[in-house]
Amino acid sequence: MNNRLTNNAYVEIILGYALLTLFNFLWLPKQMGYVDIHPHPYWMVILLVAARYGFRPGLWAGILGGVLEFVLGPLRIFFQDPLAEFDLSILHDTVIFICVGAIIGEIREIQKRAYIELREHHDELEKNYQTLKTHFNALSEAKQELDASVISQKDTLSTLHDAAQALRSLKEEDIYPAVLELLKTYVGVEASSIYVLDGGSLALKASVGEGRMARAARIEDLETGMIGKALQTGRLVALNSLLAETGERGFSGENIICVPVLDTAGNIYGIVNIEKIPFVKFNPLALRMTGLIADWCGAALENALIYKDAKDRDITDELTGAYNAAYLYKRLHEEFQRARRYRISLTVMVLELADFELFLPEKKQEALMLVSQLLKRMIRSVDLLFRMNEPGRFVLVLPNTDLAGARILRSKIIKEISLFKLQVTSDQALMRIKSGMSFFNETISNSKDLLLSATDDLHENGE
Image (cartoon, rainbow, N blue to C red; front, top):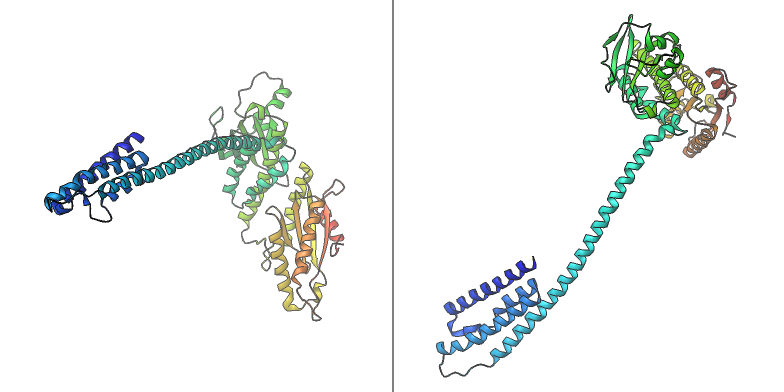
């Protein structure tokens, strides 16, 4: 690369001086060598070459310029006065050409060396960056592996519970693929399917992956095999437990796990089949996860079918946008059963506007809407907000939340409401809030008692 640049420099020097010399002969023959012209045209070649290519080309440009002026300068005598004396100032120009070309060339060389050092430093930094990037990608892959292993951690049920909110769709066709995706993500299932009871047989609704055998679009035999046992008992049936019970040495069936999909009353909607799962992930925790997901599937399907059968039945309060009281008892029962079955934390919080009956009529709606919007902004997507039939009363159902977390939320709610300083009565009294809480434990037998306990705990300012 450097040799090519040097060759280009010498070519440009020769061409530059050739053009200047040609111009000199044709148009300025009486000023050969441009002796009496200032600034001297040769400076164009010397300065440009030295500034671009460095010391050696700059030096040669200066030398060649001096030589040309020294050689061509005396020729002007033939065009002017043959008796004129030789002008010694040509030697002065020659020395100046050489010195300036060398000096500017050396300055350029210093810049080039500095550029090369910076370039080498840049390349080193780029190399270090690529190394760090490689390490980062390796760490990212390791993190993904750790994230994938979260199924073995103690808080997996909590994480899974939050993710399962995708099943809250009221469209039946959206629920089936969501269930299979949960099985794939949190259990590691490679092939699975969902069948729904349709008359006297099971109809295939959704599937993912390929099992050991081709799936049937409809299953007519509901009494034998793993599917028959799961439907008859209403419980999960796994291949290992089935073989242990029957004493069989081999098995030619197509399923590894079969779990029935039940509604809250225990009625069977259908069945979830696990057809392929890595051996290392086929463990008790995977069975528990599969049962939990099937349970959520049943609840989701129940909600979807209820919505489908009764679209005219609105479950939200028109004024506040919160769920209504009728829907509270159904959803609270579902969350209560789930908390008891899988030992998940569940807290119910009752909030009531103090002395709501004393509010000015025009202030009641404003207060209800304000509190509703505030609560929606402060709770999580998995939490549920309901407006009760009692004037000024709301209920929060907080899945996977213990008392400590609920107390923190209550403190924030009370603080936010107090900041609004909303005057609600004729004597300009400020809006106040009363609250009560209850936490699921083994002593509470049903969801109604859980709600009643929170209502009995109502007191002002969370004191």
